[in-house]
Figure 1 (tube, rainbow, N blue to C red):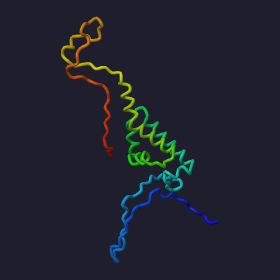
Figure 2 (cartoon, rainbow, N blue to C red):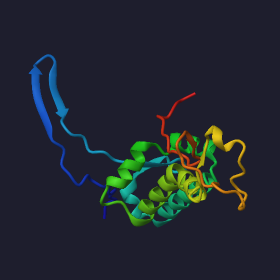
Figure 3 (tube, rainbow, N blue to C red):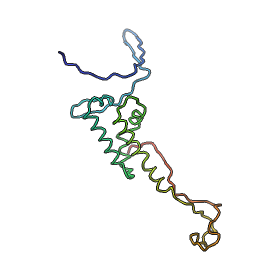
Figure 4 (spheres, helix red, strand yellow):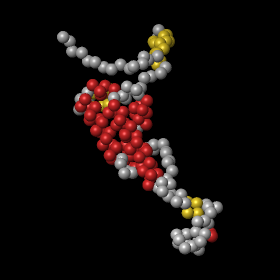
Length: 179
């Protein structure tokens, strides 16, 4: 028996073009559409694993799922500074790879989706939910002398003709900035 090392190969074949430039300059090989892979580096073993290989390594799969859960908990309750730091650690390419990949294992897919929701969407959704029962107060000069909260006051329901103020938050996104 001989020891064998198994490695995962991509599901799609690479489309390459090979050209012989000359006898002196040699060959040129071009890859038209490279295959993307997401690797997980394990410093204790000094090895990198394809994220799709983690389904075969149960302890690494559980560890990375729990790491993503920890990231979600760190970004909870509107902790935007930590969320911004986590965006530089788990970047947009990794999240989009997880969303688009059909072969990613369930725990990793769920962890990356939860991370996406916790870091990018949950704070805005909570802010919209807490302000969903707001009412609009018109800012017109005729209301400065009236008490619109007094039930005995006639004409306390003014028509909204002027500028208004809304406390509903609007979602705003900016590109990631480095220092």
